[in-house]
Image 1 (cartoon, one colour):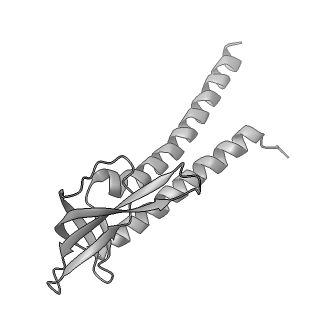
Image 2: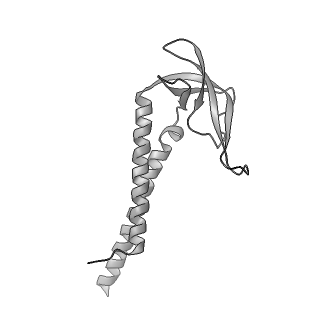
Image 3: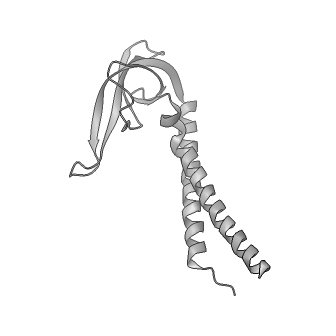
Length: 146
């Protein structure tokens, strides 16, 4: 019986985790977008969440005011994606998707807010597998040339 070395086990575990996590996030985003409505709104503030008690890492979730297309009423929704880079400014008009059944849940329409995590996770998992396979090919090539 052949034993699997620890590096191979680590590579399989990490790459599998990244790929599965990325696919899970892809399905989560896809289901949100299928149950959402596209509209425009204005950023009116931020909801700050301190991840750690020492204030080392805080997350800013933009709060957006927009008009619900079904009811016609004004709604203040909070983005379910944090904006840590400060790209969105108060008073800025943005395109957003809001959940039809729970209009207070919104995603500001941008590639970074919507697709960054699923694409980066899956790509990272495949990249780790690719690097491992390339190192194996070079190792095999050196073994054959000797």
